[in-house]
Length: 388
Image (cartoon, rainbow, N blue to C red):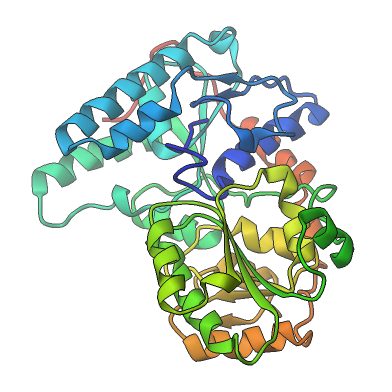
């Protein structure tokens, strides 16, 4: 499993990482022996999740930050060095040669391991697919990409985490072997008393709280939430916006809150460990998911639903809207639509989503789907690679 560069400094909730850890935690109950490798250093967001005693890549986070800030050529060299270190660490793992299945996060990781491991590769692709699409303008680059895609198809079983992503993978000539959504820990994310949660977090009991959890980046569209919140603050007394997460647009968002005159009512919480997130959902009057690009899946929405927190999303979270159709949605830049829904929620007139289907996302059931998929993977001979 790889690591997001700079987590928690450049990301909010690392859903893919959390997901892979939870799969690894659930598999032993099905009789599987699991060894977990995290392609980065031990970070605070693993608190409460590392009971499997995972191995971590010895690679300092400050070096990731320096690489990200370096000029283009130096940045490329730094990323190549990091990838080489990652490959060396993975291929040196004790017992790797005898593994029945090697399950990795992300197509790039699967591609890097082809020809270097003998066990069958299963890859869950948690991100978007755009970088795997041909350019249509550079025939040589498209030819090389087609060769790479052929190698991945021939040597790895691909898992999509939602139907929309499955269609995107198929469009990229990488049809998935299965569609398996992320799961959720239903003993962890559960409804709770709002006053108790606010007392634990030091939040006023009479505030009307709007919650955003996630990465702070352009595709998360948090500035639209700020604009909408600025428009309702005069209509809803004691309203407060909590923004939990970090990312490249953090400073711009803080400046926007000052420009909109709402900075005293907006709290930016740089990082909240995974095990403390339920209290924030339990304390909030409503959670917002304002994404302006398609979400392959939206764990924040699922967590909010499981905690009984009312939810507002955009039309860019199709998997959630399909399974929980009573969740209200707006278009990404519909400020008036946001304001209407926020006023309704903060007045207590937006009920939590019907959670009847939440149980389908329990990690025990998700792990069973992976265990069944693993049975279809076949061991290859050492170093054998098919496809060109």
